[in-house]
Image (tube, rainbow, N blue to C red; front, side, top):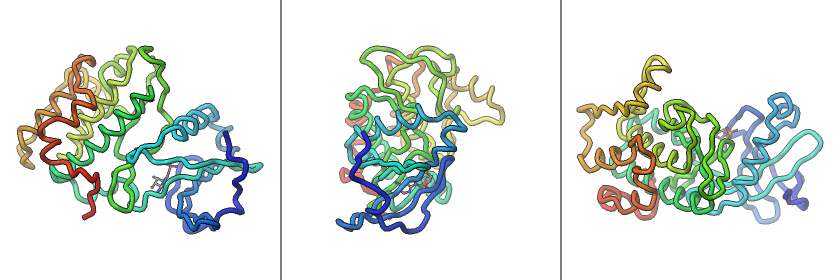
Length: 276
Ligand code: AMP
């Protein structure tokens, strides 16, 4: 699958824009076209140490096959003796998580725009039988126009239609009840996560946060959602959250239905961009 025609010599390498577990991410420019990309460098030695080969292969295969405005593009990849290079779409505004931490919480219009972007990406991914399973603010990047991009497909699974998966994965605050209970799960885990993110974007913290991991698990299983009185959040936004945080996975609102929910229709910016 590697685009053999690419090599490091095709790129001018710029500053470091991030650092992951397996290596650095650089700003880079493809010499012939002048196109700016993010070049992720992964050291093969580190992959070996963490037995991560299968994981990376899955991430590459899935991300390379996806082409949607809210999914970070993986244009190409190549390798040399010691490193693997991923040529990625450059998300100039970086991590959504950092913005959430600095603003504490977002306006309803901004949240509706992000939730609509995520729902639109999930409609696309689920149609291709890809479930992400690890959607969280750290895995969401913003491009130069403030458009949301889902990145990091390391945990994603390609789901054969109607076959349920049984691996425990993901960050605990975002886990759906069926994952906490280690039951089989399907794409509706991503719908649950959208409810968690919608809440977290509006209030600044996820709904089942607790000091202790067991308390978080317990609150998830009880679907113990509390809406604080401040900041003021409209009943329509709370309605959407309560239609996503539903224990019975078959009763959760699907991404298609999220897109037609009155709160989304009224508040989401159709361009998907949040510039300011
Ligand atoms: P990762 O190894 O994927 O966890 O990436 C490490 C950090 O690099 C991320 O947290 C981002 O801040 C940054 N980063 C990764 N990919 C991109 C990208 N395509 N555009 C901009 N920043 C990125």
